[in-house]
Image (cartoon, rainbow, N blue to C red):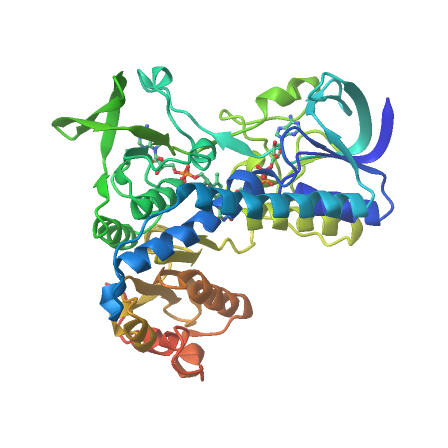
Length: 462
Ligand SMILES: Cc1cc2nc3c(=O)[nH]c(=O)nc-3n(C[C@H](O)[C@H](O)[C@H](O)COP(=O)(O)OP(=O)(O)OC[C@H]3O[C@@H](n4cnc5c(N)ncnc54)[C@H](O)[C@@H]3O)c2cc1C
Ligand SMILES: NC(=O)c1ccc[n+]([C@@H]2O[C@H](COP(=O)([O-])OP(=O)(O)OC[C@H]3O[C@@H](n4cnc5c(N)ncnc54)[C@H](O)[C@@H]3O)[C@@H](O)[C@H]2O)c1
């Protein structure tokens, strides 16, 4: 049995920096990874999707170049090149992760971790080699994997997930996507722009169901304007294969229909990777979906064992997993007494244009009875957007009626994520809407339109 001070299970976005920091503090630290260093974000999440989305944006710009008075005579999409480019970026980032761990002297075990006791773990490597490790402190960062819903017939068709689709080197002719949230919309627009005919089927009554209805409606319109077919409030009742085609039976209200396509992507959420850990060997409790239960400080029900990142449920983003590691580290070494409850949770959906989001939505504010005003500005009123020909979307901010402080914002627009981050900073610093309305921004930035956004604030919310 090899004794460590700390064991990190999973080389995800929280586990890697934590392992390095613990080793720097003089804790003998092991990290266990069953697949690739860097976890989902680097290998089949943020990095590869954003690399390919950049290529799709170029295709879209070339296709529409005449809108800017530039005429191109035909073009072709080289998907093998795009996939290879993506793979090079992924390999570089993955290599950087391994180098970082090695240069900090973290002991790396490639294999699958299973609890065999309260604080003991067996690691089985790819060739069957076994190592038994123990430590007083264990950090679970095993992430999540695509959730495959129990739809009749689905198991009998060759479905794709966000992981497998990224390695296809032939453009799917007709791509049906189940789900209408981040993965479905980012990947749907990506493949539509590369040449697929994409149909999105979302069971909830609107796309991105956590967002306000006006935000979801603008996103739907924007994607439909690129010829994506979108069904919302639609249930899939059966899936089957007819020769080379996949048929999806759907019901929307009273209407029944069948959609056919050459490929189907399942983007209906993600499920935590906890089953294989055999947590029953220790005292770590999970909820009914398998997410590890943690308190505000990310401690599990077993003293000395923590969970960070997607595996604990809640917002599933790279920056949240990264912040989880900071919270654990600061509490362990700096007596920080900090937690996850009150932190900011920004996010950005990388459709084009993006959706940047921070703070509460309008529907949450109404539910909680918070007195608020709404500032709203259409992107076709923004000088920079008009000049660059990027007028789709709008900005919306919720402002406290009495304090004039910003409560939340949604920015659909080019660089929407960056504009949202400016508002996020204002929220952190307690800067009011009036201050932003009168602030001097460089002209003609998108940021400058925040002056105009808050000029719309004259009337209280209806
Ligand atoms: C297609 C896609 C696009 C995304 N885009 C974005 C984005 O743009 N921005 C954003 O913020 N987030 C994005 N996300 C979400 C983001 O990738 C995750 O929130 C983030 O990677 C969470 O990381 P994590 O630290 O929880 O674990 P992960 O990165 O998932 O890492 C967990 C690691 O644990 C390993 N592991 C699991 N079980 C075991 C075991 N028993 N033994 C050993 N190792 C094990 C896994 O192999 C994996 O490497 C995207 C996700 C997907 C799928
Ligand atoms: N830009 C980003 O930050 C980004 C990008 C991609 C993914 N992610 C992360 O990855 C996670 C997973 O993303 P996701 O989009 O797969 O999941 P999600 O949980 O956000 O959305 C799943 C969607 O599928 C729908 N759905 C569920 N079952 C269905 C069915 N049978 N038929 C049709 N629709 C169904 C749900 O109503 C929901 O809208 C997210 O939580 C997100 O945090 C983030």
